[in-house]
Length: 70
Image (cartoon, rainbow, N blue to C red; front, side, top):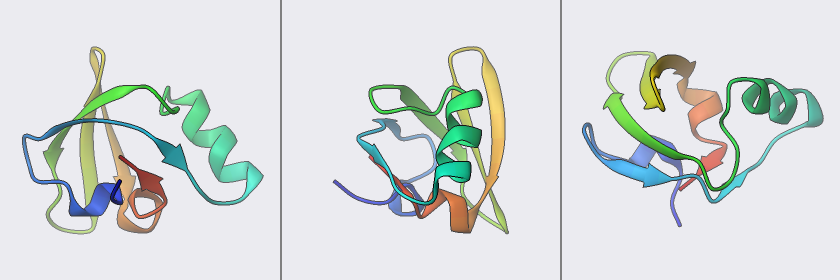
């Protein structure tokens, strides 16, 4: 298990755990980022992480990505 920020571009991973406060967990859940969900890291450079989940691309900040464990 490692934080999402350590995943490489193009790597396909499965979310194991989401840490953080209740509001963050609910926001991520509304975007479909829940334990068990398979995601692909599109780009982890710059200030944001762009990930693909199902048919959507989502950009999240690095602080948020650090709280998602894969």
